[in-house]
Image (cartoon, rainbow, N blue to C red; front, top):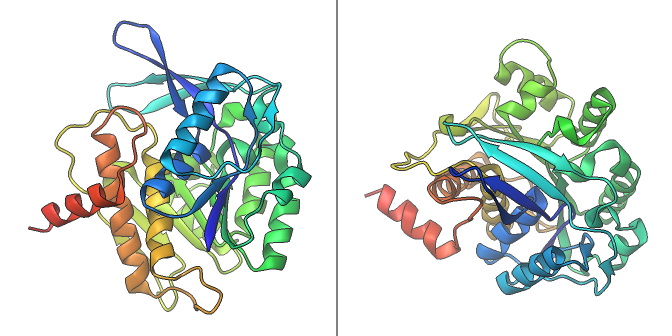
Length: 318
């Protein structure tokens, strides 16, 4: 039983205090794949990687972490870049370079060819669900439904990722409707401009889903899960306290990989298993919040290993 991840692996050029940009390996789906591997979950990365130096570094890092990279083909297109600036609160903002790049150079046929035989969870999101990629993603979602594979999305809205923002947001909502697990930050929800509070908007979006889970992350406020079986309201978990905030780069990716890993270990994705109960989902939320707290105390996206996460939680409960 394994997880497959599709979506961008890119280079974050993060500005330092001296004004210089320094390269960091990144991309939301790439980060999720790394996070799952560090939680000892079998995971494959399916998007194309470039034959340039950055592509080689991304591939080497995935393999070093234990992620399976089944495609031997290297794209002739360059690795995508993101210019990242971080404000005083550690919140990043992105300027994206997404035309003619390697991770988009992945055909539907290639993805299907490299799907693991024991696939139980298919994860995508972020820049892989912009309008130009929708036909491929829709076809894959149809296939996943036919095969009984769980669909996970981290919507990770990047409005600069598409020139037609309405088409982009409408497309994301259409994908959310059929997913089994959707992760969205408060900023993601705000982008839809649905009115009311963020939580009211999240409820509205969850009501559009076909019996799936919506996980809303609220930064330092923790996380809320909608759709737990038998739960009329929502499950909430407070964020773990952080003594030193480095930055929030990749915090959501780390959160989601830990959330999926927790559900994986409880058998939630096994064919014979029914819907996860509220206690199982609450434990997954707690582990995810703990993983995010570790991540924000370190520079860039740096998901914890399974042992690191266990030690952190044990220390927090003493």
